Length: 138
Image 1 (tube, helix red, strand yellow):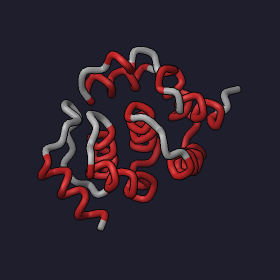
Image 2 (cartoon, one colour; image 1 turned 180 degrees about the vertical axis):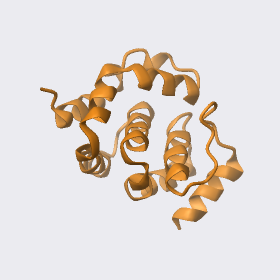
Image 3 (cartoon, rainbow, N blue to C red; image 1 turned 135 degrees about the vertical axis):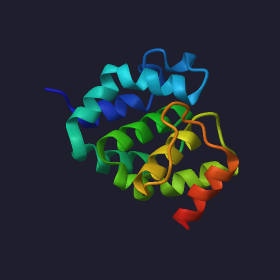
Image 4 (cartoon, helix red, strand yellow; image 1 turned 90 degrees about the vertical axis):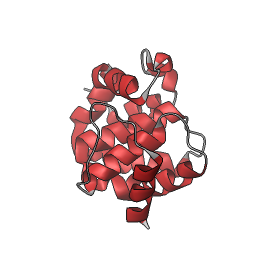
């Protein structure tokens, strides 16, 4: 039987996500996450993974863009309503110096929770949309 805590720990090393290092955009990375067996097992475990991911993101200060994006993807697919609570502070911090992936994945999940328009075919948000998301969290 799958152990979600072990799978989440495995995701700390983004090289465990097959082909993720090759992603050229958030959309491509999203497609990679959608077929990754580890991520799919974590999603299948359901709501029990939310507190594990929350703990992981709060204690680990050096998670990379791909790992954080995977966590945002999982939260969005398991229970998007928890995204502001779990990802909010990380999202706000990442806006100071955004990388290529996480701000968009976090914005997507947070915007889903607040029932704002999302971009499922792009998963790239403009600066104005990121600021709009930020304002909802403050």
